[in-house]
Image (tube, rainbow, N blue to C red):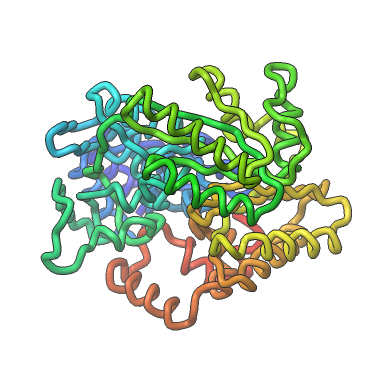
Length: 475
């Protein structure tokens, strides 16, 4: 099978775009966390949807699992190919097909890097709101597969809210295409929503129509501090109303996180605020009235200070100062590097439940690992909370213990074990902790209907759930 299949694949993409065995580079085989790695048999780099369809048909005929490899910015092993399988990279399918300023849409191929799509939209005086720290490497297809969120979900929603139309290849090689620019379409099942967030297990997205917005001409940024989480929530609600819907970001940082990140940056920039407060937030508003927006922003923050909901506030007076205020969130490597090996979590819960989750997780982690460093931060306004844990060493047993504490605390507040990066391999065994048996059975039914031979991203999500022993220790 190997020689015949290799020749057939080369016939589709060209010999120079097919890599075999040891010729496959590490980027295509190793997770960003380096916890998961594999030895795929093939790497194919198609240049069109037709080539993707031909590859999938060959894979289905030879029972060859296919995993789409994007920017490899996920953290749960979701884009690591199966051993002996095929890694499918859409990096050559990276064109921005069209920007339509009248319809406010962008048609783009799945391999396009998010930052390039953002910049292309800006060049046409439009705005693609999705924004992630990994914007320079994450692909559009990957953000669709993961239903990515990021810094501006509070105002513009997840990737699901930006996808108007999709083109995808199903597990038998069938191409389904509805590259619609319509905001409303109630004609039958909206199948695109099955694929968004499915982690490449139900289809391979090849092109998308994304909803753009008018480009904001103003941005106000502030770093604020609160005396309690409850005050932070009240401030968030006041900001949302007081800024007339212009609030785009409200990024919470607990004191330990803020202290560690700013400490690591002191050789480049001063700490923007003293370490006297239990919780901090980055506030961003975007609008279109240069004079009025700035005045409104200052007026609302002044009111929050007067009412005691804020204990301190620093407003950026330039783009450079705004970037400096965002630095603790955008430039985290220096603060995180000394903590390696560490584990990063992105979980979700009702905003009012966050203090209970933080208290329970922290107390149980400290009881089990007294030396633990625990950092909490997150988008918060959209119910997404991040945690970084370091206990000085790491092995499968420690990893499992940390997972059980964190996800146990999530279960107690009826939250979700995945807010952004999906399930992949590492979280699969905990999926039943926040999903009911009926929900899991429905997921299995959908997978069996769309991919009965389990060709697409084999070993992930439900597959990993049904084989927890193999999933627990990493690839």
